[in-house]
Image (cartoon, rainbow over all chains, first blue to last red; front, side, top):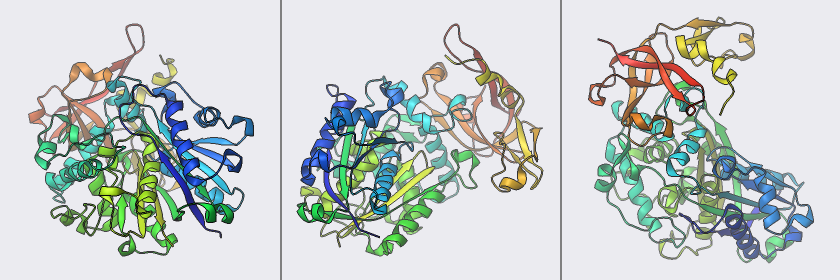
Length: 385
Length: 134
């Protein structure tokens, strides 16, 4: 099978972007990606649009058609399809686009993610985010996604697997990295005590354990067209992409404090890429909640992950760089966009263009995007040949 | 605003904690399922409704300070995963107590309460919540 490369990437700033609409965000990211790839709309065979809850946030469905239209490419009749898998929509769209190109039917595809979350009040956004839970048997009874994460954390501590500090460290790492990234939602540096002592959202989790409500869009151009790959200034290879799922609700799983799907998808992605975890130079994981970051790492790296949180591992200049973008926690979490921004960051890093937060000579990134709390898991390996 | 059947069809499950037992592997499921995730096609036609005892203990819990619009008046409220004596884990609110009384292992029992409503003229929806056993 043929090789698939990322030819171009583009992203908007993430944050509370009051003056930009969903369509403006999407077309900004898409245009940047196309220009970065050095291609034109005529070269695009399809558009895959990732979006989690546009129908509820801005009353808009058929979002891929809207993005194509307002990106000025409707006259070309380019097929434009939305992919939805909760907050794993971005990763899932990238995987679908990758498989489509890998199959040989399509040559060059734009995959873009967008979420406009701040057009509704924050309590309404909390309700919409809860849409990734079981509406009839979790949300109906008062559960928020953060409350489920909190119950996972409480049980994890009760089982004696980890202490509060073992997961409170992740927002600290993400904020440090985000402070060096121009497109971040947050740029402030925080300490572990700030996380633990901030106002509670669902105990023991505080506002700093939660990724923010953000607007933002990111896009990539991927291709297997040799001429376009040779023309691109700095193509980066997608080495594999693999997904796995678990029961929708935590209450239906055999273990509430592990993410079985994460182990499955990350093992599968590494195996398809022909790499073991030792060959991965940096990780981008789905730190929607601090406890979710810890459990993902336990699945991906094994039980050593907990001990690693006690040292200075995970910073961009350490042996195991993690969320060097600033993560969902501090770079921002526009739901359907987040998985694609992880791929944008990996590409920029692998090109050696990440500035202050540049990881030293990386060859392979593993990115992990998740829907809900371990429900949908998409792992992608991006690297240089 | 939702139509009545959306809530009416779940009444017995939400009012009396009626789940389904796979008579092929003898496992009780709650919420109710039409297919057993272990036996799959072997379970077709063998899922029987069964009412749970309503008794269980706290498996994990949280005190919610930033909750859903519908539950705003109750903040801070306790959400829990309740391990039922009958087997399943149930996501539910713990009421009639202060958050400090709730611990992992605390024995609780189900009670029927108003859960939410859709505005002044919408349907009032009832369901289970749990209280601490005396």
